[in-house]
Image (tube, each protein chain N blue to C red):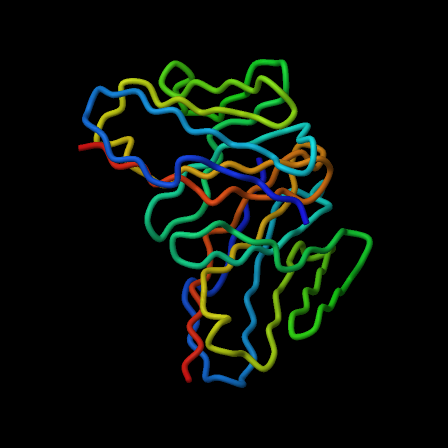
Length: 112
Length: 113
């Protein structure tokens, strides 16, 4: 079955710096890759997603890149702000896109 | 955007009690709903997938007699934790989809004393 790895598990950056979180997946059939942000005790919220026919997608300070050949995708956050502090989960679709396998998460701390 | 409502947000009850959690899609019809469990500082672990009008599909290791799922309509799924014990204490989150992506409820923090 699909296996999603995510690194690093924790990440601390200074406000204004960039943050990069990387994920790898194992199932070449996966074709949809969302990223979720979860604040403590709250619901995961979709922040950006990418499909396998696209190599990069950007939304303001957030971008995602996908390398299908290498089976890895990354989240890039530029000009980080304290409110970006949260746990970020990557995910890869399985079962024809019906569901996802989530990565273990990255706890991002943006220091003022 | 799509809204998923989950209720209750917090439950504290005695061991042996059965607890029902509701998950509703408020502004869309969800062809599929999912139930996840999340332990502190860990990722989301899929428990089961439910499609309206059919039996839920449970992930390996999840007891279907313990975690009863009913998906009675395209906007409502319920998870009942039967005869709950302290080890069932956790954060339970539902999600719903009609296409991509999944939209999550606010979660239910279940504490069994």
